Length: 69
Image 1 (tube, one colour):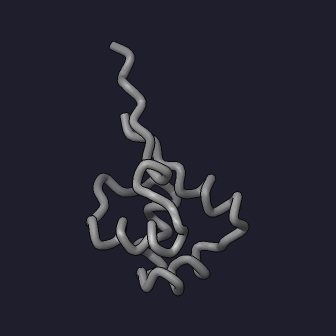
Image 2 (cartoon, rainbow, N blue to C red; image 1 turned 135 degrees about the horizontal axis):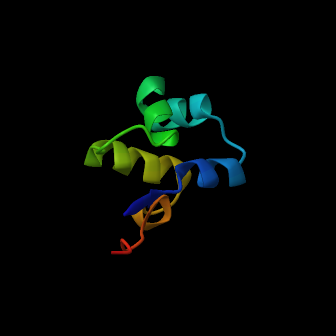
């Protein structure tokens, strides 16, 4: 399972969805869906923009947690 940490990162930096969307040049609606974990995939271009805007890596935004079978 992949865990989305975007809301935690943005909260720690006290950044709003609108601020990050403007800085990263991402549509608000797109970022809103990622922030609220409502997407099934993410385009690498969007991930690259998020990492640049938040000064982080993909590993900071997404964490792999093995499924418990």
